[in-house]
Length: 544
Image 1 (cartoon, rainbow, N blue to C red):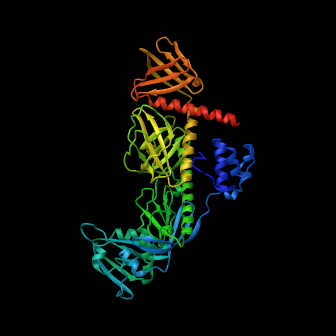
Image 2: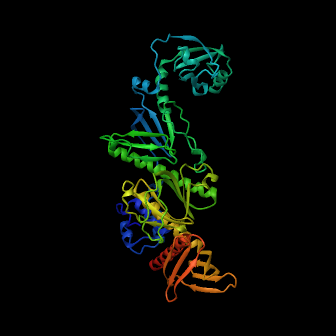
């Protein structure tokens, strides 16, 4: 896999050493060439490959963050902002020197020029339909701010007066003083008013830009996720002490470099929310700066996936090796009678790509079209493929040329062979997932070891046992007599009719026909997986 996906970073780089160490200790797939990439001597033992001795601890710590100035696209205009990558959140603060005229158009907030100085009394008549004032407020004594009108909803009672504005401080409501009120006190007072409300207000022109920026940032959207795959402390963004700042949670997000076309494309990147309904487009000073930001954000997002895998394993009581985002496409059912490693023969495009959350457990590869919120939702994936019934195969079809970082999987199920393409954003992701699928499949085969099924053999009811160590044993159900017993090395070929018949050809005894009574594909794929596991085991023994 290292050679196939051309994982050849500069010799001795921390990322490559980590990958080599992981592959060596987990999957033992290193060659002499791979040791040379890491700058190690041939024959280095696992004990000599201790990570602490190879890489300084500071190089393997989680990303420590990044701070800088970027442009943020809101509506159709670019706004200068300070951006800080803080753990698993991205903090955004709009620059103080924003264009007031442009921002008024993007927020529908008008800055009045003829508001009288000093206090004003405004009478608001609530509408019968809504029953509300039609305003939002911010501030409160706990925030060291007066109670301020932060939003006026068009067409509602406050808007219809024509005399209230964003930036008005509410001093009293029906003669009840709010100058020392907390935010909650003010909300309670405003909710308990009658049909006609007398507000005493004072316009604070200096806070209007503050609310312009807050409204611009709120237009981004981006709700937090409530999922058991996210630590409780990370399910909501940290509260910002400033209304002109916003913190975006990065859990299950995606980074794209294909958001803008033209000359500025190389300077831009985009972050998508998990539900794909919200996104932020940023523009950096240079292509290099944009690439650096994209890399740092991708690393932070990968940390959230690693954390999700750990949390899933603890909650579900099983091993979850990998969790991540990908695009998935299922092809039409294959009618071929073979289970070879060709992906394209007998398949055609099965529809559009679907964005998915993909996971590899100790026995299955599964995916969902949305982040599962609970263990119950985890147990109901859009698709679940048992790994010992899958094969990772090659594809050469022009259908996938636009999705160059793909892994392709054939699965032998009760309905026949289904084919699935899973596309990633980078070669490193493709290599990691390909390695994960192969390694977990072989581990699952070693753990399962045995597959037992009922078959018909020359008119007799029999039980076929396929044991990864002992081979094939056919036993007559009525008498318990062994009809035949064969070791794996004796198997020459296997084929099936794609419906119910399976043919196993052995050395010396020739071909045996078995009536499965159902589609034989699951067993055919299991046999192939057992063989692959045995070959890998022999390879490991040879290297040892």
